[in-house]
Image (tube, rainbow, N blue to C red):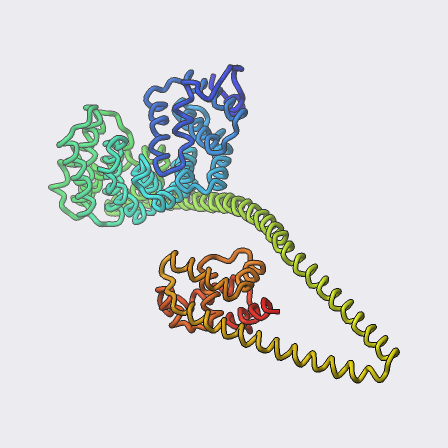
Length: 585
């Protein structure tokens, strides 16, 4: 009795497990990898599962890993475990539909981890849960290929299988040209992953390419790929003699059929007959019918209608059982043509009518396939929308959190400056009141002395103004001298910048402090630019001192202005000038 999904996800038997358990230790070591080697290292575990097929060991691993994850949750390990569980289910023949939802969970985990390489692995495995005729199979394989290409195909074992899967599925859906494109891409990986390269998959891919070219009327290309099958099997025969003989016959039969389609009937007949004999020998009903259809075409062209009709009727019954409605259509059309040429109009009408019935069946099948494709695409889009919404929610939460932190950090210096300005205003207000009181008292006490006091006061103020003017002129002189000294610096090294910064701070002690107080996140490069702009240097002079181009200076100014949130109407130099004026007040 096969275990259900619910049973697999539960802890089987309570066991005393530690992270160093020898059964799961190698799994944890490989599944926790995050670099591009992760896929190849995980594949070692999956290869072991495939080669040994020990179901009891597989179930013990699931039991212990589930208990480990309950004790030490790890999303990456959880996604890998879902992969392992799904691969095991496929190896031991469990019902695949039960693993669709767990694999969807793994897709969401890989998306949240922003790991495209892991996501590509999961997409390719998820595709295998669907039948070859299901559009989901094609859709998720193609998505896996896109992600593998972004990461690098060399990081993925079995990458050729993805292209083969898409090529074969597209052939069955009648998209022959796209099937050829993916098939050719598959062959390019023949010598890249020798450990996982399957010689039979190579033969199957050559067969699909040959058949697709035959469907598009490119008969020379068709024969080229079937000849590749003959050459490959001749150089290195398949270990199974039955497989060797069958595929040699299939390749020769299709070469013969392509020759017949070009009117080379005598060359075609022996090849098609060998194909038919091999297929009859192995009792392969599908290949028997295909060989009979090809041979009947030759007999029809040679006007041997009885043989052609007999073979077509046999092939028709077999194609009908397989549900190959396009082959049924071809055979019925050919039978109608043969009976028409024999002037048996009743049978000709019968098979022409049957041809239209099969055509209706094929149209229904194609409609259902398109409907299935549409549903699969909608489901895929819904999954992507769900993942996008989750990402948007996380981004919104991060933005709110960062805004709160930024607002709090900004509030600290703003509160400090507001409080300081308030205290300064109050202090000036009290001083003014006191002066007015003293003046009023002096006027009331002695009117005459007021003029003298005012005169003396004005004289004292004039003296103070002259003294302050001398001080300002002296300070300006010192600043000019300091500025001229600063302009001699080249800021191409960290040592020259540190000396420049030290001298600049001595000359303009409050400027950098105020700049940092107003803009906490200012960078060292922006600090250098701010000092040079303050000194009145133009873009050319700044570029010379920083060792960068004039255009780079312009870009740096624009980025700096944007970083400082300066209004568009205000220039960066104007803003920094006003900032310097604040520091002198």
